[in-house]
Amino acid sequence: MNLNLKNKNALVCGSTQGIGKATAILLAEEGANVTLIARNEEKLKVVLSELSKNQNQCHSYLVADFSNPNDLKDVLEKSKLQFHILVNNTGGPAGGPIFNAKIEEFEKAFTQHLKCNHVLVQTLVPFMKEQSFGRIVNIISTSVKQPLDGLGVSNTIRGAVASWSKTLANELGQFGITVNNVLPGATATERLNEIIKNKSVKTGLSIDEVAKNMKNASPAKRFAKPEEIAAAVVFLTSEKASFINGINVPVDGGRTKSL
Image (cartoon, rainbow, N blue to C red; front, side, top):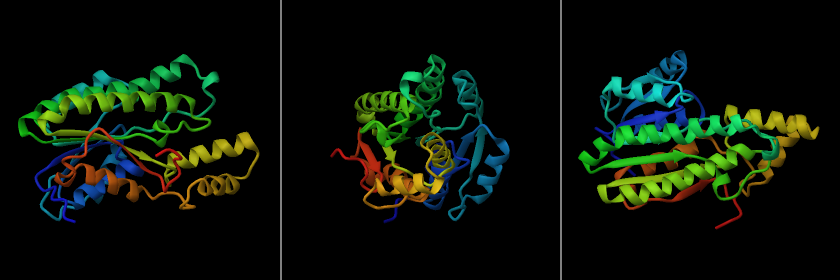
């Protein structure tokens, strides 16, 4: 299937590693002009060098700290770049029981995930409306459908982002703009490695045992590859997905128990 993203400008958040990086690479392969955004400039430069230019694209990057929505807004406005596609993707909060979570942990996660998403949307949507085309894809978590043990703050904030997204989809659909969520299951990323190590410490099980148990929780009996999550994201950014709006798409090998 040719997704035909030539002449489409895409902004990919958290694109220096994991799912964000895989999404940026695949968007470029499909012909999009990709702008990476994250806080580590050296890593951004490395990923930028890996993006395909097979259709004479022009790629770039922006440096921004998602702990500061005002800084993010300034960076976007100064860049004067305009985008047809926005991929919201931010690393998850630290794990732990929700009862033990500090108020500051909720505030930090709410800022990084929801406030910054909102700043991005408010800044980019006017151009999307002018084009009568926009694609906003939020990479969240299967915890939106089924809260995950030991990820109390993450479960809470991810749910808030999903509700924000659905509300936004209802408001923007009339302008040719879709808003959808991709919900990754356990995916082979640095974030997953951290979760496995933490579970190993708390349970006394070896890292290999924890990883095996997590794999067995999915009918696929393995972890997803970042590229597999990226494939779902990139499809939702295309013209082919023009009538898919306001949904949650689990990409988890069948782990989520709900329909």
